[in-house]
Image 1 (cartoon, rainbow, N blue to C red):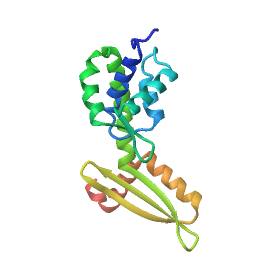
Image 2: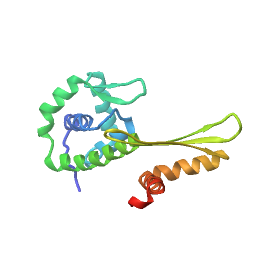
Image 3: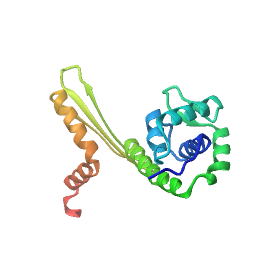
Length: 174
């Protein structure tokens, strides 16, 4: 199926459209994945357009090498986004919604592993919501493998662990 994007200017409009809707700065690969929602776009055209947008100060690179939309990019992108085909914007919006959900999840669910002086490890589990901290739990683990396994399991299902802890404290209410 042929794509709807016809030229490099439309690719630039699409990149600005995406940059205006991601919830935080993103790496090259993420903008690439989100931009390739149209079959007419290829990697080389995308790379050239992205570099042009940085050169013309529509986007900047932050200290971590992530792309950030500038005020100029926001203004110009908003003025031009209606020229993007509706089907491309719809597909892009679906992809952006999924990406932004992943970003929120990463911000809300954190697990870390740190060595302790005695040779054991601390596994820290943090769960937040839009209003702030929900849980901040530190557990001593006997070795790094156990701590990493616990961290992985927490990240896969933090709500389940939280619910089990609450049930332990208040079994009569649940």
